[in-house]
Length: 503
RNA sequence: GCUCGUGUGGUGUAGUUCGGUCCAUCAUGCCGCCCUUUCGAGGCGGCGACCCGGGUUCAAAUCCCGGCACGAGCACCA
Image (cartoon, rainbow, N blue to C red):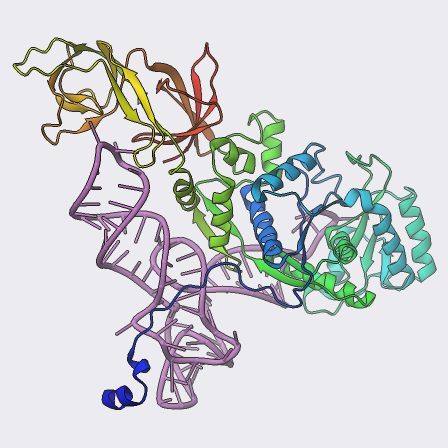
């Protein structure tokens, strides 16, 4: 057999190594003028979870030369009311993540007239009706697959009820506009779904101008049509939303956008945080703010020193699948390390410092002496210059390192430690054996520092000494043997404040 | 309960459309070695998976049927 193949098709015997397809898969449908959208609720800043939508949409737009609409879905004034400042937070975070501005920005609350017009149109076309049932009553009709009594209202009944609703003459909960689908539909979620309801709470942008607000399924459907959205990429929890909206689109004679979904992402290492939960913890003083280090917000990640590039690569690596996944933070940290390791200067941080005397007069027979100063590289592989340390007769060692008898002080010399007397004796400038190498700081090179790290739902603070050499506020450094941290505050009279990134 | 979706190593992911080129890709993780005056980075090697059961077929991760598991929707939230 083998011989025959060798004769006929020698290629068939060569085993080809398969190659992994990388990057985003092709978008379905017509991709000649792609318009995508990212539609957050401005009831808080963006979280790492939201950034998936930002990245995937903006990358597809880049791939096809298309556009992204940033749409604020701010049509709930009651359960998830918008925060006025959040609109700008989200725009800034979008720009930070993608490196560019959204192509179009719309706020649903500013387009209310359009939604109310469409609502009136569908009522007049008898595609919808005003339902006066209570939530519980309707729920019963829905599970029993029965029409509610309001379903047979005439168009003129509906229009007059609608006019009362928008005029503010009806109470919250007393009436709702439902899209007329079919109460016998097998999927209960689609049976006469609610489109607009009465809400009288103040809206931070338009105040109390409107008494009737559209629900997501209606607002989003209309706005996607208005913006000419060609592709919707959303969580698969919104699959029924697609089905509800498709029914409306069919009634209106519109073509529904191509729709893609992603599954649920659970971030291991972060607790379970929803925007609403974080918001209430902030409002009741439990958390200092949205940028609290242990929160999975973009602001917190940025504060710690994650690069926008790492977040982008992370989501692109996970890709667009409908699988529900649990990913450890380690994954994104590893991506970030690779990006920043090449750029970060090295510094020393000594935790639990203990002060020692350096015996400058060597007692042993060798003629070695400690140098007056030493040069340490700012980066072990990349040429960035040096840090110069002046050697005095006193140094700091980390407590955990200092109870070993023979050590090598990194960059300086092999020494003998006398822990009880707090004395250090020179043994050899040259490396003489394979004793362990420790980090240290000469007195005079140190600043007090605190290192704040997130620890599941709280911050832990470590006090120590930082190497005081060209520290720039906002910069991320690698503290050797420890990990990456960002200098958040560098004020002359107080300890340097470091925030932990990762190791 | 009804409806929908998803199951590939520890974690992700490629391959599933159109069965053979898959003794299954890549990354991360873990283990070992090398390098290194960081417990970092880098290099090399290793570990480890097609949810289960039938069926179709010369041939199934891929197609069909039946289970099972997990997740979601059935809100006057998004």
